[in-house]
Amino acid sequence: MFMLNAELNRHNSACRPYMACKSFLSKQRCLHIASGLKTNGALKFLMATFIGILLGVYIGIISTKYGYPRLFTSDTVQRPSQEIRHAKCKPPKVLFRNYSQDAELLPSKLVVPQTDLYMRRLWGKPEEDLPIQPKYLIAFTVGFDQSEIINAAISKFSENWTIVLFHYDGRESEWEQYEWAQRAIHVSAWKQSKWWFAKRFLHPDVVRPYEYIFLWDEDLGLDNFDGEKYIELVKKHDLEISQPALEHSRKLTWRMTMRRSNSEVHRETTESSGRCTDRHKPPCMGFVEIMAPVFSNAAWRCVWHLIQNDLIHGWGLDFELGRCVKPPFKKVGVVDAQWIVHRFIPSLGAQGEAVNGRAPWEGVRERCMYEWTIFHKRLTDADEAAQRENTEG
Ligand SMILES: *[C@@H]1O[C@H](CO)[C@@H](O)[C@H](O)[C@H]1NC(C)=O
Ligand SMILES: *[C@@H]1O[C@H](CO)[C@@H](O)[C@H](O)[C@H]1NC(C)=O
Image (tube, rainbow, N blue to C red):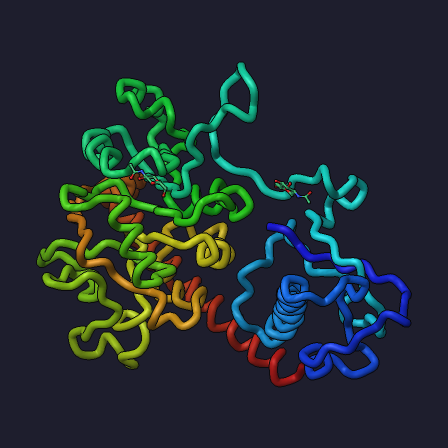
């Protein structure tokens, strides 16, 4: 949230070399921190922390160059000033400040580079608006026909969740009958999909305050699910991208998502033959479906960048989510102890258009498949381009 901005001044006399710094930057470029301060234990600790952050930034610059996943690349989060890298032996004054290139003309202390989805009151004092600041966000893409299922589902999420409903059927006012609908955020756009909404309304700078982001379909039964317990497990097992396991059904597409009894989480599976060319890769490892994913904030920052504006069904995304965490075989998993039921209710998928005597769902299905091939092509091209950049650079 805060970017580091080192402002360097020119008191070379006070310059004190720092080993870690030497090993990463060339000797002439050695960077020094707050040398005016007395070096008692606490200050040493502070200095070490700052150096750590600076090195982190420096390594970040290197890894960006060499094409590792870039978790923090939105427009408003800027890289630190070039000065850091070219600093000669000068003790810098180190300041934390909110830095946004778009707001260079404004005093940085006033700049607000992120926002949130907290609802406020029209009256009273702003600082008293939010007795609870929800740390988690659940977004359902809904049609009113599924309102009973959603109503039941919402009861599984405590006041620690911000509720977002993406309406694709234009019936958002009918939800008023539910008490909780008043504290939900409603976004309505005719016949748009979950990934279309997510790309537009859950920008990482909008959902910054949330530790975990749930992006779920509307046809899920949550009788055996509890939000708080789910979060506990995800934290315990350090899962950055997860989903609750699915109750057994012959209709399940992937074995990975299938619930295992006597297990808290699992991260790998075997598939029917031919499906996993590499058993360390999706869909045998590092894999969850796009039906009910849960992302850590950092993972979501990356995944948001992976979503294509025009490929609104998100097909094929699930195979690539693992790119957003390191290492995927550890950080992607399925939570068995909190599980859900997929009800297979035709919803948005049935909202296509009947053309030439074909059912509406057929056109939608066809588009899903077509999107997947486009996505695959873009990915292959992008991987090749990145490979070239790396070998050239
Ligand atoms: C940076 O912005 C955040 C809110 O986005 C604010 O709480 C914080 O005080 C700001 N920090 C500085 C140093 O301006
Ligand atoms: C909400 O979160 C707080 C802080 O983690 C926790 O103490 C509280 O029990 C949670 N609320 C519920 C209903 O679980």
